[in-house]
Length: 179
Image 1: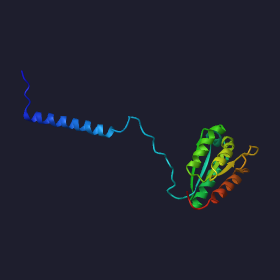
Image 2: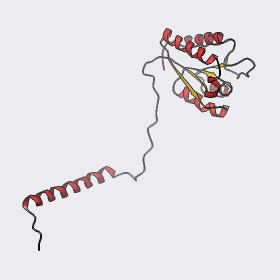
Image 3: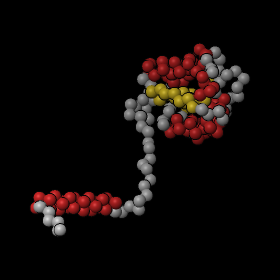
Image 4: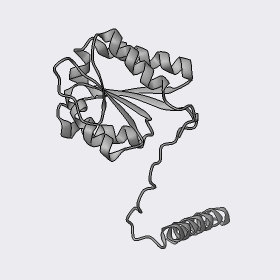
């Protein structure tokens, strides 16, 4: 017994074969010139579309949650933001050592934080190296009494209210034009 397709079935089979061949051809055309490996990804460049200055608060999550000055300092930055139309952000991460904190400080500078306020010993001690590597960023260390202070970095001590007032003053002292 011989198979005799109807004219309509032949037309459908022919159309299907043509579409398959066209798909293969388009796929080969799109794949030509590549070796199957992904090219380097485009560099990410953060931008400040608002044109405002940015103040960033950072510290080790374990350290900042146990301190009473963290909330006061954050409120002071938010108040400065409302008064001068600054961008403010906070980044609390698990970083218990200076070596762990330094990449986060470098990242905040790369994200165009004009003022970086650091809370806690790990971040405070990393500020000296961060300030040397990022001279256009201002760094402020919020320290507890008796805590070592880094060279070349503004250090804020005192009561929670005094720390907040001083951090707010530094945020308000930023120039008005953005990045």
